[in-house]
Each structure stands twice: as C-alpha cells, then as structure tokens.
Length: 477
Image (cartoon, rainbow, N blue to C red):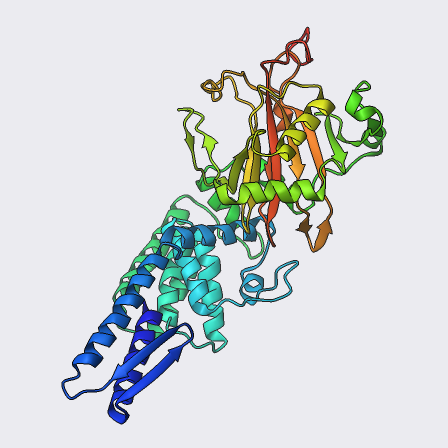
C-alpha cells in the first residue's frame, strides 16, 4: 500500500507540475501514456487523473490475489525456524545470510529479525522468540538504524526469557529497559513482579532447606529441550531425524556392508529386461531397500515435471482419526497426480515399475509428483495404514499400501555437496508378506535448505498381489 501510495503521489505531483508549465504534456511510462491537457477549470486534468487512478487500482486489485498473505508470511517464518533447528544454524549466521550452499547472500534487517521473533511469540514459541529478539537487539547495539527501538525488542525478549524460567535474566533486562525508558508502564510493573517472584523463590529454597548451589554446579538444560518437552514433542525420534538430516546418522558397519550387494536386475528374465537389465543396489538390509540407477531418463523427468507443474497443490495427509484428507504442518510440499492415459511417458513409467517389482499396477495409486521448496519437509511417517486407524484407503477399495516406489527427479544440495540422485529410484515393502505393517519403514523428507527438491512416487496396494506376492506363514515374514 505504501509503495502504491508513493507511486500515485509521484504521478499526481508530475501531472500538477506539467499542467502549470504546458498546455499538453505526455508522460511515457513504458506501455502506458498519460496525456495532460490543461484548461482553467482543470476538468480534463481531473478526468484523466481519475482514469489513471482507476486503472491503476483496478490492476492492483487483480494482481493482489497473487500477493503474499499473512499465512504465507507465517509459513515462511516457521520454515526458517525449522531449518534453524534441523541444521543447527545460529540466528547470527542466518541474519548475515551465511547459509550452506548459498552464494548470493540476503541479509536480514532488525525489522526482519523482530518480525520473526513476533511470529514465534504469537505461536507461544518462547525459545525462538528469545533467539530472534536477541539477534534484533544485537544488530541495534551494533548501530543498525531501524524504526524498531531497543525498548520494544527488550519488552518481548524479557517476557520470553521469563516464560522459560530465567527470572533473574528477565529482571536484568527489565532494568536495562527502564534505563532507556523510565516511564515504561509494563516494564515498571514487571520489575516489581520479577523481584517478588525472585524473593518468593529464594524463600521457598530456604524453607526447603536447600543449600545455595556452588558456582559451576548448576546443571544446564538446553532451552530447546525444555521447549520441546513443553510441546510434548517426541524428543528421541525428533533428535534422530534431525541428526539424519545433518548427515550424522547411523554409520555403516563392515558386517552390514557385507550383506549389501549390487546386481543387474531382470526380475526373473522379464522380456523387457532381458536385453537391458537395470542396475540395482542394496541400500539397506532390514528393511530391505533397493535403489535402481538410471531408471528414468532426463526427457521423461522433464515431461513429468511439465505435466505436473500446472496442477501442483498443497499436499495433504489422511487424518488418523477421521480418515479425511487435510493439510498438516508436518507435511509442507505441493503435489500433483498423473494418470497413465495422459501421456505415453506416464504409461511407460508405470509399466517399468511393474516389470521391475513384479507387482500389479492396476490397483496402485496414480503417479504422484511432489515439489519441496525451501523449508519444505515431510516429518517421520508411515506410508501404510495402521491397525489403530480407520481404513484410510477404504474409498479406493484396494487394501493397504503394500509397497512404495520413489523416483528422484532432481539432484539436491546437502551440506554444500551436490548429491547426484536424479534418475534413480528406491523401492521397499511397507507390509510383510503376511499383510502386517513393517514399522521399521518409518521415513521422512528432510527440510530443504537451498533450492528445491522434486520427487515422484507410486504407492502400490494389496489387491491384485495375491499371486504375485503370496501371504507368508508368519506375521513377520
């Protein structure tokens, strides 16, 4: 709005000046010409000005639907916080634009840091509120000019620190606020309250007979751990997930290496594979995950993306209680579905999956294409429906998801190194042959730090596999 106002004011000012100096003036604004005809009553000038403003506002109204919304801003902020946690990035590094793999840096202003802290604050996320209000204050202390003053920042910061149980630090910050603004009403109220709470805390310790802790003996608990416990986040899995995303996962042992092999796969001399077997590599033994190399061509990848792009929509999940499809904060991506009759490439891809897996594709879901932008992710999840959930795939009438096929249709940057995965695919069974779910197949898509990631998957269902993958004799077979 401010930019639009400035633009209108600037044009209006030019029209007025031009009208005073000449009878007719033409302002060339690229594709738009403004003709100013001066007369004493200014009637023509008024009409032309009105038409210009009406056209500009009309165009602005049309374009406004493409402008970012509050939801977009909040989503972008949460994505940045997610990346900060997952890849252990400091607020200072992010603010300076020092991100892994980034060449052209974008620095954050005090206002940017403050807004990020405010969004975390409104989400009752005091851990990140403290991080970003501290960064905003740091940049102000370094002399950066900003319409945001120190007192405003410290007001949020002191409360965030207090909410995390550090009353003494909150008190010190409040005293610093009052030195800058002695009349600040909330700070004066907080000063008395914090002093009262500290005194109350001191008396409680004395009454309980607690000895004063010696310097250096006080146990330090990571604030983020505290925040995550308050939000009832499953900490062990969350930490493992983030470690895996940082490349700090399970190390391959010699024993496990000895169980993994590479081979040329023709799937029992399938006619289409006899003369052109596919390169297959064992990625893991339990659950058994295999990767197929050079399994999809660059032309096929470009065609899949071309067909998918116009249809990309926010990805959904099946609600575990109601079974209804809905968006979720733990799955941030866009997806589209492609059917075999849309293009020969899609039909060919489906046939290739059937030839290599030996599984029926008629009952499988359509080919899904997913795009993950910066911050896009899919937190740990299962592809199959669990026993304690309603049948998420009841409408399909094809049973549970027995297996997953996943194409990598782009390379991606991981810790400044380009990992070449494009053109490969991984495959695993979600269910044992008995039909029981394999809970070791829990997997995730790590948040994208730089660029974007494209994948395409095929979920294969139970129906039609009765003779292709017969039921096992035991639950875990």
